[in-house]
Structure formats: structure tokens, C-alpha cells
Length: 446
Image (cartoon, rainbow, N blue to C red):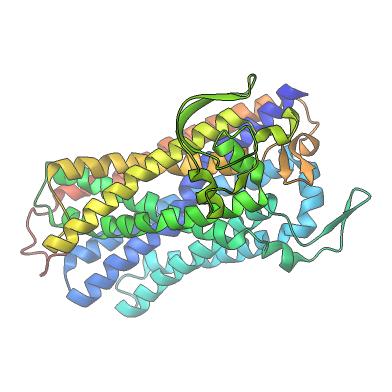
């Protein structure tokens, strides 16, 4: 029943799109607070400690909401896709179990970190922050391992409709786990780095001499710019693997209809699935073949290789991919400008025009993150396990899914409002009360 499947897909997309915001924060925020505390230990500058404490409170709030949204997500998997869970559970259950173990470690060390100020020696306290960073990152990697398996399944055979010869380790270390994980972790540092830098850039426009915002801006921008330069390399690696293992996803990303040599790279354009054409795109001949296979004369498969019912939704995938590339290009250009300025002037750029550019990048990072996730998930369709199980065969037969969809939308809207209010009160509200100069708060400037 198409409407039934569509509602299940929309519900899952909403839950994932919400949860991923907290998942990336759980990986990247501990890095920022650990850097700030390390600078406090090294310089005895009190502003860095205050900054680490504020970021830790923000991390705690985001962690709590992420735990709620992640729990809801696990229930939704069983509710919406019972056939998938029945077959995939024995194969790919291990990374989910390890993710739970990493989650508990993250919760324990975050609790010690939040309540250990002045109770633990500074370096031991800082090591607890590093442990939060490690366990939070591992937690995200284990989840991505499971998602990579859905795109590049391994570790089992299908015999008479049953999954046999199951090897959980081979399933977890599937061909896509490393490149998907690396791309996701770097994306987390880019997104959250620019988001935090954007908040403090906005505050610097109002209070240019505020010591906390100056130091916060420097730390967050450094993380954002360095990871922003690394992300295109991981993206190129992922695209090459996609071309080899999921050629129809690549064809949908580029709206490539015909199998051809010297395939063009398309910038922009609007695919017409009914006419199987793409209009209004700027085409760079041979560039897609070169980027995908390292050879301008290489053959790139087109969507016409498959009947329409076996193709990914090309309009959604192509537009999401173009949006991701556009936002990613903005972030990379900002990284090049910022790092070049840092190299020449030995300081981060704080001109108003650059601060406004960073504020724009704070939004662009989240747009790129959601667009990239859309490409990954929608580009795998119509398969929930690539070339093994169709999404339509995994959906629940339970009627009235729209009621749970509306319930989750209301719940997540409420959670979104709560988290914004908590961040405003516990992280940002008291900042304006700080002195406007570094003197009297500690020593050196960052």
C-alpha cells in the first residue's frame, strides 16, 4: 500500500533527521570542551575554564535529549520495519550492542566530568573529558557501521528466504564501515565546529572585545576549518566506493540516465523522471568518469540500466546531492580563506564580513549534514538492505501509522523547544554578564 509505505518512510526520515543533530553534537562538543580545558591547564587562563564549563553544560543537555531521541528511534525501527529487524537483527546486532556499551561509558564519564570540577585533579578531570570524546565518537561509529551494512551488506548468505552462515564480525566490518564512519565523524566536527563558531561570531559582532567569545570563536573555528578541508577528501573516497558498489546511487546523484563513456559532471539541473532527461544543468564533459574512476574515458552506468521501479528517487537524490555540494563548497572556501589569514597574520580573522560569513556557515553545515544523510538513505532505495530486501517488503502491516507519525512530530517539536530554552538559560544567558576584557579574568589571550 503506497501511502502506508510513504508514511513509514516520512516518519523514519523525521526521526533520523532530528536525532542526527544530537548524534553529531555528541561526537564534536566533547572535543571543543577538552581543548578549552587543556588550554586552561596549560595557561591558567580562567576564561578557558569558564568556557569549558559552559560547553560541558551544553554537551550534557544535548546528550540527554539525544538519548531520548535515540531511544525513540530504536522503538520506531521495530514498529515500522519488523521484517527488517527479524532478519537483520542476528546479522548486524553486534554494533548496536557495542553502541549501547559506548553510550553507557559516555554517560558515566560525562557525569564525572560535569560534577568533578574542583573534586578531581585538573589533568584527571581533563582525561575524563577525553574519555567522553572517545566513547561518544565510538558510539556514533558503531551506529554508522550498521548503516554502512545496509548499503554494503556482508557476513551472511540468503537461502530460501532465510539469512544463513551469519558472521557478525564480517557484517560489522563490512566494506563500507570505515569510509562511512570517517565521512560521518569529520562531518560532525565540521558541522558543530561551524555552528559553535557561528554563535560566538554573532556575539563578537555585538561585543568585539568579549574574552570568552574571542577564545570560543578561535577554538571552534580552528576545528571547523581544519575538518572542513579534510571533508572533501573523505567525500571523494566515498564517491569512488559508491561508483563501484552502488552505481545506481551515483547515477541518481548525478542524474545520469544513459550508460556512457566520458560521462559529464553536472552542476545544478532538474531531473525529469517521466521523460528520463535532466535539464538546465552545467555539464563538464568527462569529469564524472574521472572523479569516479580516475579515467576520463571510463564508463559510468546510467539509470536506464534498471526498470523504473528499481531506481532510486532521482529528483530527491540529485537535488539533495547538489545542495550538499553547494553548502560543502561554501564551507571549504571559508576554510581556505580563514586558514590562509591565520597563516599570514597569526590570528583568526575577525572582520565583520568574515564573522557574518561564519554565521552563514553555521547554517550551511546543518543543511549539508541533512542533505548528505538524505543522499545516503534515499539513494539506497528501493532497498532497505541493498539488493537483498526491499523497503516495501520490510514495512509493518499495522494500520494507522499516521497517528504515531503525528505523535512523534509533536514530541520532537516539544523536545526542540525544550533544548533551545535549556541552552539559552544554561549556556548563553549568563555570558553577557562577563567582563569585556581579559584582564582580571586570567592571563593570556587565545
